[in-house]
Image 1: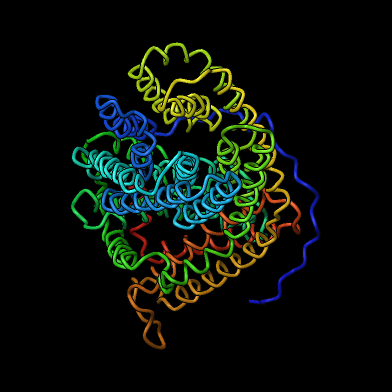
Image 2 (image 1 turned 180 degrees about the vertical axis):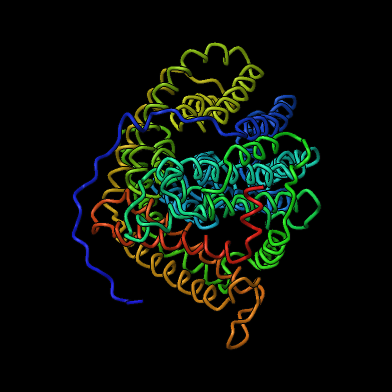
Length: 599
C-alpha cells in the first residue's frame, strides 16, 4: 500500500440547507424515557423546595436533576458509571461557576469564564461520546450559575443541594433496570436487526435475483463489483448504516458486563445481523424484522436455532470483544488521538460564546449568558450541521417566546403553577426534540424563561425582548465564529481513516488466505501453523470498527467549508473492498453460518 496521498483541488463553498433543517423526523423509539425521567428527577426536588418556601434555590437542584437526561441508550452497568461521571462533571462546572461568581461581579470576566467552560464542555462530551443532550445542559447550568449573586460561604451549601439532586437523578436513571434489566441491549440489537433488514432490501433493489450468482453473493462480487462500479448511494448508505448498527450492538452487549442467558440470545441475534451483511441475497428481511419486533417490551428474547459454526463464531467473537473492539490500542492513546480533531470545534465554541456574550453586553441585555448558551448550542460536527442547528434554534426560540407569552398568565398564578408549567415544558422538550431540534426548542425556551422567575415573577415583555435579542445575537455571532475558525484537519482525518481501513483490510485478507479451505478458525495452512483461534475475529472487529469510523469521518468532513475536495472515489473503493472482506471473514467461519441465515 502506497503511503503517498493524492492532492485534491479546492472545492467551492457548499450550499446551506434551509427548509430541510426544519423537516420533522420519526420520534425516537424511547422518547418517553428521558421525558418521564426528567419530570421525576426535576419534579421531586422542585416540589420539595416549593414546600419549604425556597424555590429560589431551584437553579442548584436542577444542576443535578438534569443529569437524568443522559445515558439512556447505555446498558445499566455502563449507565451507572456514565451517570456518575456526568454528575461529577456537572458539580465541577457549577463549582467553578459559583466560585467565580463569588469572587467577581465583572460581566466581562464572567462571560470569558463561561466561554471557556462551554469549550471544555464541548471537548469533553465529544471526546467521551456521552451522547444527547451533549454539552448544552452543562453550559446552560454553569452559565446561569455564573450570573447568580453568590458569596463564598454559600457555595458549599449550593453544591450540596446540586449533589443531592444529582444522586436522585442517578437513582431515577437506574430505576428502569429493576423492571427491564436488558432493555438497552435489546433495543441496540433490534436496531441492528432492522438496519440489516434495510440493507437486505436495498441490496435486492440494486441487485435483482437474476443478476446474482449461484452462491447468492454475486451482487457484491459479480461483474459490477469486479469492475468497481458504484452500486448506488442508497445501497451504500444502507450498508454503512447496518454496519454501524451492528457495531453499536456489540458495543452495547460488551458494556453490559456479565453474560446471562438473555444476553447470549441477544448475541446470537447480532450474529444473524452480521450474517445478513455477509450474505444479503440469502437472508429473509422479514425474519430479521420479526426478531426485532419481538424484542420490544418484556417478552422473552427470540432464540434462533443455532448452528454449530454459528456458535463457534459467537464464542470466538465474544471472547475477543471482551478485550475491546480497538484491540492493540491503549486508552491513553485513544484519548490523545481524540483531542486533536476536537481542537477546532473547541476553539469555535470558545470564540463564538465569548463574542456572543460581549455583543449582548454591548447591546445592554441583562442576561448575556442566554446569548452565550445559544452560541454554544450551535456547534456540531461540521459547518453545515452548525448552520442547520442555528436555523432550528432561531425558529424554535421565536416560536417558544410566543408560547411563553401565552402561558405566562397561568404560570404567574402562584409558585405551584410556575413549577407545574416548568415540568410540563420539561416533558414536552424531551418528547419532541427527537422529531427535530427546533420543535424541542419550542418547549425549552419557555421553560428557561420560567426558571429565571423562580427567584421572583418578572414582567413578561422584558424577558421576551431579552430572549429574542440574545437568540439572534448568539445565532449570528456564533455562526460567524464557526466560519472564521476553519477545520482544515478534516481532510487529514479522512486520509488517516482511509489508511487505517486499508491496513485492517489487508491484515484480514492475509489471515483469510492463511486459513486452509474448509477448515474452522485457527486451522493451519498446508505449510505451517495458521493464525490463532481469535486472530481472524480480531482482524474482523478491527476492520468493522475502522469502517464505521471512516464513514463517520467522511460524513463530518463533507459539511466543512474551505478545504480540498474529498477523495470520494478512494472512499467508495475502500468501503466496498472493506465490506467484501468483512463478508469473507464471516463466510470463512464455516458454511453453516450462512445456512443459519437461510434456515
